[in-house]
Length: 171
Image (cartoon, rainbow, N blue to C red):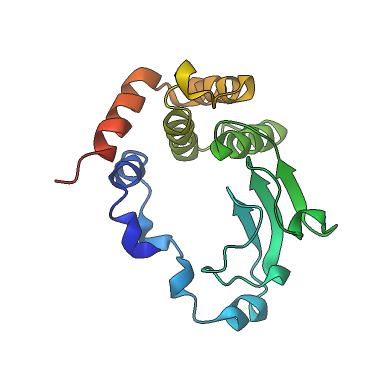
């Protein structure tokens, strides 16, 4: 929900650092009703979910893709008309980053720096900067983060520290 975004201070900070405005964000509660989605032929790719949360109310007919790192649930993943990417990683951002990097390479262009910066931040937070005690990170998380770092030039230690500090800053 939109009202919860303000509480996610690390996300707000990352968006500001990446020069991404929330003015163009669409929140589920701002969609008039499900007919708006179907009438406008809106296509939705679920990320970090492989079933539609009941609170969102998106018609299954609008789902065209799923990118998730959780165990499969629901029947959407078996529909042949939905492109499904399900793989256990420490962060769903790893799977999105992999797609971004692949698409950029296919189009012989650099990936968008803002996207790469945001994805790197999400991977670092989700894996707690690859802390061994969390047990969540995979080799793929590391590989994709390393590729995103090359594209952004960020210092991962500093970026992680910055985001972690913002996560607990409610001033």
